[in-house]
Structure formats: C-alpha cells, structure tokens
Image (tube, rainbow, N blue to C red):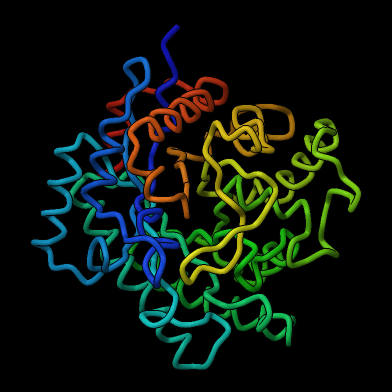
Length: 356
C-alpha cells in the first residue's frame, strides 16, 4: 500500500512575527523560518510547504511583480510551496470590521491587496490553495457593547471583502480565535458566518484555539464542557470535541494542527488567546493525532478530504525554542502522524495540475 501523501504538510511563517517586537523578543526573519522548515526531516519525510503571513516585516503586501517572483524563487529553491495567506487586516494598515466607515474600507482594501498577491502566486504555480485568512480585527469587549449590531457590521464588512475576493478567485477563512469579537465562541462564529451568506466564506479551525471554545473563555454561556470539567476525563472531552466539530466542520476550509494546555496567553501587542504549546508538551490537553480526526473526518468517520493541506501554527513560542531544529522535527513528526491516521494517497501529477 502506498503511503499517504495528502494532505500536504505546511509550516507557518507568522509565528516569527506574532507576539514579537513591541518590547518583546525580536522578529525572526523569513529566511530563518524557511531554513528551519526546509531542514526538518523525519524518516525521510519533509514539510511540503509554508503558509505565508503578508506582513511588512517579512514581505510587502504591495510587492512588485519582480519582488513576488523573487519570493517565488526563494521558496521554490527551498523545495517548498505556498498555501494559505494571512491578510493583515488589523490597524494601522487595516481596520476593525465593525468599526467606522473608514476603518471598514481599510479592512476591505487590505483583503483586495492580499488577493492580488495571492493570485499572482497562483499564476506562478507555487501556491497550492486559494484561501486567505482574516478575522474581525475587533476586540471582544467592544463587540459586547452592542452584540447584535456589532455582528451585523462584521458580516457586512466580510460580505464586501468576499465580493472583492471572488473577483480574484479567492476564498476567505475567518479564524476561530477567542480574542476576536464576533468569533470568540463557536456560537458567535456561526452567527457571523451565517450572516455573511457568501459562497466563498469559511472557517479556519486551529486546534489550540477551538479547544477554548469548549471552555467558554470570553463567552461562558457558550461553553460545551461543564464548569467542573476535569481534564483527566478523556471521554467527556472527546464527546465535547464531537459536538463542536459537528457544528463547525461544514464551514471549515482551512485547518491548523496545534497543541494547547487549556490556558490562555498573549505577548507583544497580541491579546490573550489559546496558548500554543509544543507538540510534545507534557501539559498538552489534546491527543493531536486522534483529535485532528474530528476535523478531518465526518460524523460517520469518513475522510472528508476537505483540506488539501494542513498547517502547524505555533505563535508566541520563545525565539530560543523556534531557533532549535529539534523543535521543527518534533512538530513535523506530529504532522506526519495526523496524515498517517487521516490522510490519503493521490497522484501528484493531478495535484500539480490543479494548482496552476
């Protein structure tokens, strides 16, 4: 039997930026992240690609065609492809999706610029998907002042952004993270997605963030696990994950493998959110291989094959940890396990033709 070669295994570049700077640790250069990703190897298996954050600290979103081609050549020379892009929708380049008219215009304009960048990478043949990640760029506390109106405004901005993205052949994935208003719980996330009502909007699940949906951080009334839940009760945790994924899986178009110890964390200017832990962290509450299956398989246990690639997200790890090659080898090993348990084999020629 041939070994599974799908979904493709990607690393993320934005952990070199998120939670860095602003009096915190220095930003990790893009070249360093590419080098560590390309060098990782477990029993002959390597990362297939990267998901790219369009942050000025790594690459200008308004890069010229020559600059984009240079990025293409650099990533290709490392033997990697590019998958999902992150649009920097936050101020100062963007603005709150539920903010003033000017802020919402900036938000949509950032999406437009990110879509332009993504379309060019697809035409160059190195980008393997047409998904761009967004969030509401709005605080939970501001959203909570007028919940109904706030969600209505976020949905309106997302609709406008979706219409722009459709013109470039792109889909938008709204990140399920507890620090963003209107998507800080599974229920508010569903409400937002349903109000957007566009065929090219979807959900991005990150295992570290969605675990906190179960606990009701920032939205206690929406918790799925009971207030007296004990982490040793694996059966109850599994049942809760089944409930959560049954609701959000139909919307999910992008998926992050991650670990969480059941707590929140923030660094730099980033608000507290799901704490990303190393794949082999002894305090991790998730069984990564098994729990990824709740997202990758339907309620009957059948593979959905909804994701052509999966990505590791490890934001706000200390630089000392991220600069160790063993860190990336251990992460890659966890990704490989997920693919062995929930992946499939496919002819590579078909895949390469699809991305062009």
